[in-house]
Image (cartoon, each protein chain N blue to C red):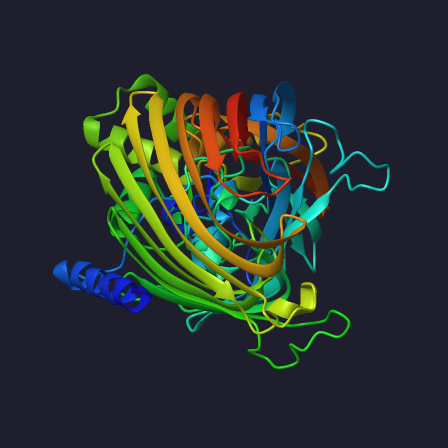
Length: 192
Length: 356
């Protein structure tokens, strides 16, 4: 009797299995506590892994996400002396190119503020905001002791507008001597 | 004024969220709190009088943390440590020696293209094969452990799970015997294994415990076969579990010493859930037939044939994605002669669950 029962189960299974296509199931992610009650380790640890609460980096120690993410140094990249403009930014974003450019952002920000964006520009702006959401940036601008930091503030403001068109939160500010002048550094995070 | 900037394309290659990089270890906290006020009505198994009581239950509330370190391309070290907490009393029992944090699933392992291997303490493959077919899991009077063996969490286990291939996944869990006098000295003297298949709304699983000490019903070494099926059709989800269990090789280790001991169980359950807006209407029915010869069952030495029957209905109301309130009612009838079980018991519960 039991043998018949299990034979029936196996036949029922086989019928179901081969009745449909056998491509992988793309079930949606659930709460972590539910996914933890499963043997689908890939789903829990990688496929559906959300932003971790903290990360231990053997070189930098522990970083708490949300307030102390690893920042992107925008000024430590190579090729920082190639002039460009917002149009180049747009075309690079659209083409997926990965160069580093230099541009006069202050003028562009002023120009953008006074001009209404066309739909294509708005689309690019929204896309940029989405890509940079929650990313932490380090930026810097030079200033002289005699001239004061005003020029640096304008430049920093222009960069923040550029990277975070939907707004930002300044996380940290510091200065570093550079020859006879200084660099004013800002660390900021785009609004989500 | 020229300003050095990254192009947008650099931002484009950044992940939306900056997750751990190679060599870094990320960690996430998670958990849930589930508490129920229950009213239990039962016929006393001693004098037959009807008794009633209100209790506050913490239903497998837990906190856990898990994480990974990327060791190479598609190769990770993974870990998880999960602990039960007691929302109702703060400790696992009534004694001062009871635990504030009781270990649940804890493991460390490696995960890659070849699959995942973990070692530690974990729910058996057979237990997890039921997925969420048991709609009243962890609830007093509702959980399938009231009439099914095999709801087991095993210590000293090593588990290997294949990657999902065409919807199929296979797991093998070896449970090593470390108890004094334990005759399970081989790698596969005690194991839990199963194969599952999932595709869109269909889930199927076949699993087996071989000589695994059961965590529910008959808490001895059992051989169990379990078949699980569930299917979601729109807002309706149907599920079923069929199970057959019998005494395993080490069954007599924890029994009376008689040479005629045996255990036999045939059990099943069916469940249905229907989503109606923020409400989920749920019901399930289960039944078990047992033949026990000269074995300890429910704390008593038993030589009996008996049946147990349970049905449960309930409603969940979702307040948010992570929060719900719920109510349920269950009835369990049994014709055994055990002092530890009432012949007829009803449970009404009103509870809340919050996940984080």
